[in-house]
Length: 377
Ligand SMILES: [Zn+2]
Image (tube, rainbow, N blue to C red; front, side, top):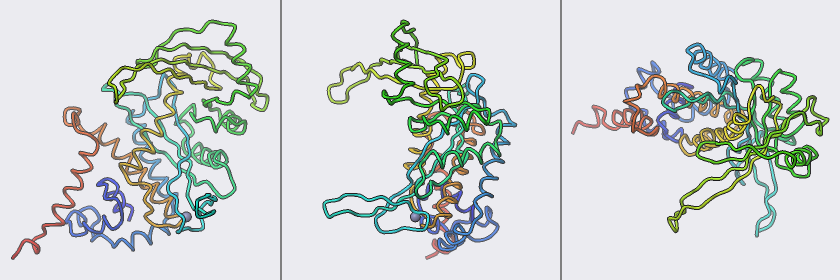
């Protein structure tokens, strides 16, 4: 069943019915050693699947890639990104794992049901051709009445037991600027690097007070001209077990305006709080890591939703939702590892990712649509 679902994701078939529609392809005999099961059977098995066996599969792939030196760190640091993602929402259908919220509409209040997961992505350094391998390691569903960080700590606890040396620092958005998150990572010998965005916080105010005293240093992030400020040893967040470091980056870049075709100058500002010392990560590295947090949005969630149809509800049942997502992670990791490491750069060149998915789908559709019995008059 898992092998069938992997092909469903690789060929981007979109649904279990899409999978069933290519059941006539001779490929299944070779791949499964038996005919493809019906959509209903796959869905039913997925409600009963032990999801931890999928996690073992994900770990196995990680170990192989690590051993083959395919997962270089960034400047000597292993880096992971954590973030929450809402996989779907519905007013009608719900299950025992659904979260609920009240939506105020013109027709009155309505209860909306949804699922949310916290996901951990491992980010590796760029390879010689500029490409980088990213692995979706694991996910944890957010339970009723708990916040995202609570689910994230559960996820990190499980991941760190299985992957104790996979990463040194965890990147996260402003929601994770919470003492339990920092203290948990410190307790595991890991670092946190998180967006700091609340100007009312003592730490923020103290850092900005110190920024006034020293001129910023000029720097460069990609094509952006930056002004950086960096202060260490801040003790104005006593709930966190160690003094903290705050880095601010004011960035300027030009962008083309679609309407007027003119170049516009855009200015942005980022502030991060981290447990990393300057000796472990100089200012430029902190700025790079701070921006790297977006990898989970740009290469993780966006691609999984638009490219892999991951927000589709393959079977609306709490365990099946986790099992299909973990299978999608396995498919994503294998697909990218294969594309980047097994295909020669000259074969990859000029072909978008979707080319390979369509190539896989083409084999299924061609053979399924034109079997010998169909072509006879
Ligand atoms: Zn549900």
